[in-house]
Length: 138
Image (cartoon, one colour):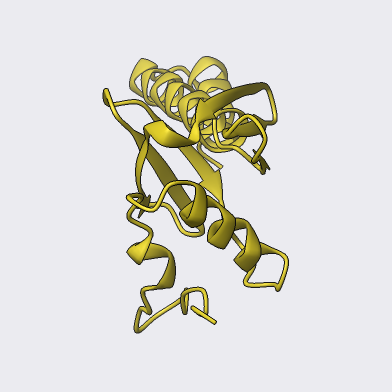
């Protein structure tokens, strides 16, 4: 949305003439590109557990990686709706989408907790008064 507003403001600023409109358009373009990279490119849409190697693999639109399960400290709620973050020792983190409460998701996190009992997953199960109701513990 910010990208579309930016393009519109740049076109208006160039065609009508007031340069502050074009400057505001460039700022909206920069914000739009940043949000695109953060939300679509940098947020994992797929997570895979490999119990044999104790590795968590993730894949985003344009990127992928792997984390040792033993390095994971906690899973916290992000400020963005439906997004959680896996925090690792040393300060690294991976954001991922969690938009479903289906039966397939619950065993994934149970397996992760069994492979690393010290990982804090309380925010996955936390209920909010608005929006996300949390994963059922059972």
